[in-house]
Image 1 (spheres, helix red, strand yellow):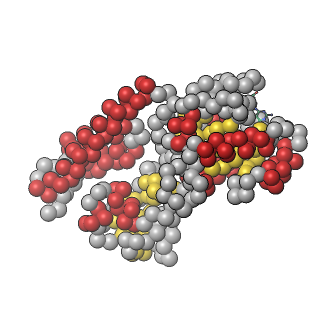
Image 2 (tube, helix red, strand yellow):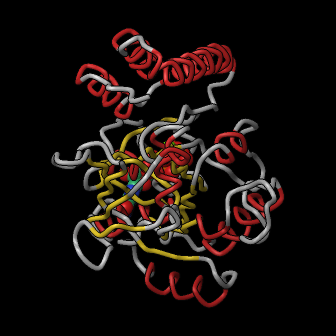
Length: 324
Ligand SMILES: Nc1nc2c(ncn2[C@@H]2O[C@H](COP(=O)(O)OP(=O)(O)OP(=O)(O)O)[C@@H](O)[C@H]2O)c(=O)[nH]1
Ligand SMILES: [Mg+2]
């Protein structure tokens, strides 16, 4: 039976898609449930909304407890969470301040940052969450840090390009990430941990004397396969390109959806893993949709605008998809 959903319902659903916190999601779901026409054709959707609502409420309660107990837990927001790590004074907090509106304390002395701090980095039409962390050294690693790092989707490792011990910094941090199983040993395994390709090493403070030579040394003597990129917050060198690299690091694509006969919604893209298909998108829109969907049309990566595609069609970043 047709569901015949109303504009109020779609509005509430829109608010749900835009919601970034659990509280916002709960209130949008409550609204969807309140305005959905109550008849046989919507019974399944109603049941699904109730199920999602109760799951979110449980999650919210757990988070509230965990949040109070653990300042090293940073709740994920936006299109993805990228955590920074590095030795003292490598410029982690300065980078957070340069790329987001967060205002962490920055100082010439080491150990300025004592707890993780998050900020949202605008990138084109999305926001990516960056997390600044307290520093590591050979003699001290903050006990909660591994949890913060493991919880994120990708990592930025800052190495001070102005320091003579940059190679030691790199080896120590890579060892720490491997030992604590924060980074997986190899990208193919299903083991827990962040895949190695989600790590980017930044040669920070790259405006300092001899930083170019040190970058070359790290390229030659650092482990193969590790991506290196020099940046300077002071001169701004590399910062624009870095935003793009951070987006690529997340391994996600942005997909816009449209309703037949209407303009696409270009404001709130769905964020999906790279390699996702039309069926994956359908599942992200609604649990039942992969089963009930009939056709999908694509604007963007398809050969022609509005081309009908199969459910296993692999989507590309910025595709517009109409599912009916
Ligand atoms: N020359 C130069 N100095 C920088 C740059 N970025 C940051 N700094 C300076 O480096 C010092 C340390 O910067 P922070 O951002 O506090 O470094 P941090 O890694 O957060 O330090 P901790 O919190 O102790 O781990 C400050 O004096 C900054 O002004 C840069 O790109 N170039
Ligand atoms: Mg700091």
